[in-house]
Image (tube, rainbow, N blue to C red):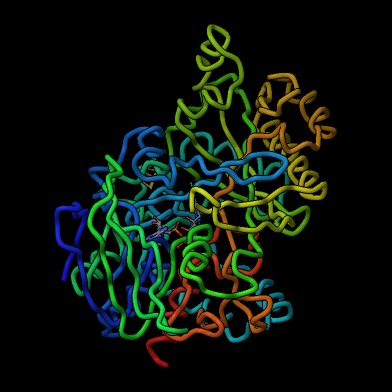
Length: 503
Ligand SMILES: Cc1cc2nc3c(=O)[nH]c(=O)nc-3n(C[C@H](O)[C@H](O)[C@H](O)COP(=O)(O)OP(=O)(O)OC[C@H]3O[C@@H](n4cnc5c(N)ncnc54)[C@H](O)[C@@H]3O)c2cc1C
Ligand code: SF4
């Protein structure tokens, strides 16, 4: 059936019928779709964003926000601070813009999920699937030639500090050339995002609709029978003709944490847990300024990490290369002062922390916009974790030889000698409004569990109380992970699809 892109409103409505329709083509949606295709089902993937081949990826951070991010990457979580939520809206979902970091689901989560959510039988299956995915996606440690100085410095510093874990990252990017362009999509075809690795098979054997934001799941009573919406032009945002894809056996929602819950709400699905239990790993970075050039944008986007602090205090530390225009937005000041600061770009290294936060938020539908609204705020324990992260990263920069630290915390001096910065950071303010943080590892909204009053789906991803309606993305995950989530999402989505195919 192939690929159908934008159809203008002068075209007749598009209609198709398949065994299963999957909404969203990211880590969850693509894996659910390809698993069903391999099981012999006829499958349609319906994706809000456009299909871009790697040679058409944007070249700048601005281009990425315009072309491949959801809402320009400018959706804000509403709490005491307004922190941006970053997700993609493109064929391949957030796997197109992510850093391809591959981490298996930590073993300690399975007993927690069983105890708190009644989820059993996942551990061995997920491990087996993750091993298979690693082989299929040629997962490898960042090759030496692609590491770049920032990652090498971070590794040496982590080792020197005697951290229990300090490693070069394993990624779904065999032969990474270290261009530091992951956020814009990998035009070198090294990153195995789902539009490269899986969706071509779905397109060949089934149907892929792009530029097709689903507005509603079609229900007959409590049975899901398809999806519908209108095409939207990827550049002009003009509304096109209606599309309807009917599904004989299943509708699988995998539209991301914020959109899956909202799509089910707009479809009038009733569940007391819908939109609840939103969690995430808020992340931010600390710059070290070095005498010698570091050239953080030479080398892979993220090449070093440590899980030594995953449980106590609850942090994952990593390196991150961001392009000069984004660095500029992180350095305060304007005019000549800002230019002088940017001039030292080659000497800056940015190392980051993702906080395994306790905070729990909620997703609702915007009254007038119809878009997801995320209410989420940090309380004191999470702010203390964040502050501890600043100290640890500053200490790591110190061990690597940084002369000064640029923390980016509003109200603190722009730059301090490293030793002094560490002392100041130990008592840094605990007001979230003083920190520049983004939310990119998101969980919940349609969490799975055995109790329908506290979960939206069962352990097979089937929505409680409905027939043929399933969820297969990060919104299923009922806790934070403390590690990067793509591997967990892909293996859960595979299980949802395997169980559906064998039911
Ligand atoms: C910048 C960044 C870097 C990251 N780095 C890593 C990393 O290195 N390793 C890692 O493990 N994780 C990483 N993550 C997180 C990881 O990419 C996500 O957790 C994962 O992709 C989420 O999978 P998903 O299927 O739930 O949603 P997504 O992958 O976001 O896919 C959802 C898709 O659904 C589509 N959609 C939404 N609404 C609709 C609708 N109504 N109709 C049709 N389609 C719709 C969206 O356009 C999108 O394509 C990163 C995330 C970001 C943003
Ligand atoms: S660093 Fe460059 S070559 Fe490597 S995966 Fe990212 S975009 Fe591709």
